[in-house]
Length: 137
Image (cartoon, rainbow, N blue to C red; front, side):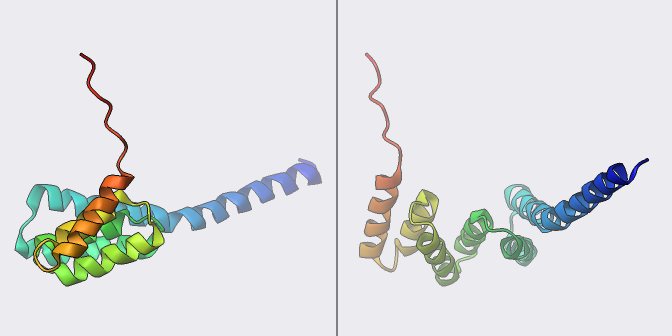
């Protein structure tokens, strides 16, 4: 093998290692999120909340996606931890003002304690919803 071929192979190997280093946290985050959601879907109970919370928190720390935060907020709503859910959801809505799910859940979180905030969030979520076409006769 000539020097140019060897240099190319070394460069490709280094690029592959760099890519693996970059992708590893995202893959771990996706795995934690998937496991947390699986438990929440199949085995949700108050006793499992701390385990699911840990998985979703780890996932949220390792990914720029808001999906783990949304799932964590839903878990907190289930557990009656409305204040924590609201803080997470409002942070998501500040980062992503067009996140319809965050606004829908903010409305749900405020439904009992702050009807005006709930109504404002509900209106925001509806404004972000795609229009529903009229059914054809």
